[in-house]
Length: 296
Ligand SMILES: NC(=O)c1ccc[n+]([C@@H]2O[C@H](COP(=O)([O-])OP(=O)(O)OC[C@H]3O[C@@H](n4cnc5c(N)ncnc54)[C@H](O)[C@@H]3O)[C@@H](O)[C@H]2O)c1
Ligand SMILES: OC[C@H](O)C(O)[C@@H](O)CO
Image (cartoon, rainbow, N blue to C red; front, side):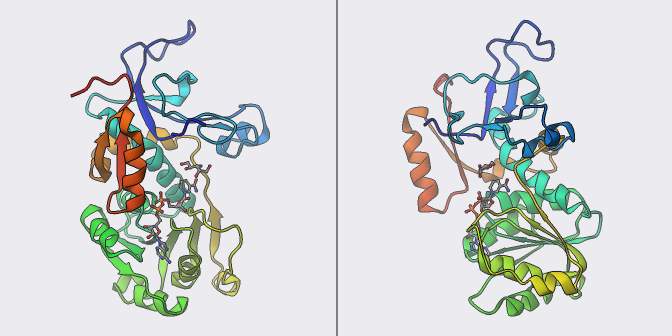
C-alpha cells in the first residue's frame, strides 16, 4: 500500500468545472474525502463520515506519490509567503486546530496543559498560544522533547515521572499560580494511560478535557474525577469544517512557525531513510521530496 497523508503539491491539471485553481498553484492537500451526503457530513462534521476515503488507510492508497487526484475544495491554495514544505505540515497542524477547537474555551488568559510533546502535542500547544492561552504547559517523558517545546511555544514544561497520577498532577499545578486551582483545559496528545490519568487530576473543576492521543483501545480512566469536577470531556478525530483553512492562516500570519518542526528533507528515492530517522528519535518531522521535484 502507498503510505502518506501529510502532503502539499503543485497543481498540474484541473477538471473542466474547476474555477478556483489553475496549473502552477501550490496547495496543501486535505487527504480524506467524505461522502458529503450522510448525517455527519450534512451536519458539518464530515470527519465523522462512515464512508470516509482517507489516504493511507486501507483500502485507500496514500499521497507518497508523484501525482494525486483530489476534489478541488480539498486543495488549499498556499499564499506566496508559505512554502510547499510548510504546506506539508498543514495536516498535523489541522489535527491540532481541531483538538484545540474541541476545547471550545481556549480564550485569552486561560491555562492549557498538553500531554505529549510529539508533533501533535507541540502543535496543540502552539495553537493554544495562538488562540490566546497565557499559560501553556507541555508534559512528556523525554527531556529533549520538553527542551524543544520550551523553545517552540510552551510557557512551562513538566517531565512526567513514574509516580501516582495525582502526584504528577499536583507537581504540574505547582508550576504557576494560574494552575493552582487546576488547568482550564487539558489535552491528551500522547495516548498513554498514565498521562490520561494525570489529565483528569490536573483539570480544574468545571474544566475541559480533550482526548486527541490514540493509544490502547481500553485504559483505566479516573471516572470519579470526571464526575465530581463536572469535567467536560470530548474526543477529537482528524479535522473538519474550517480546520485546514485556519491552519493555513496560522502559518501565513506567522502565528505558528511549523518550519521549526522540520528536521530535514530526503529525496523520494531515499524515503526509507526518513522513516528510519524518525524511528531512531531525536528528529521531529523529516520531509520526503516529491519524485517530480527539481533536485536542488
Ligand atoms: N485524534 C486524531 O485525529 C489524531 C491524529 C493524528 C495523531 N493522533 C494521535 O496523537 C498522538 C500524538 O501524535 P504524535 O504524532 O505527536 O505522536 P508521538 O508519538 O510523536 O508523540 C507522543 C508523545 O507522547 C509522549 N509520551 C509517552 N508517554 C507519555 C506519558 N506517560 N506522559 C507524557 N507524555 C508521554 C512521547 O514521549 C511522545 O513525545 C498519537 O497517539 C497519535 O496516534 C491522533
Ligand atoms: O492525521 C490523521 C491521522 O494520522 C489518521 O487519522 C490516523 O492516525 C488514524 O487513521
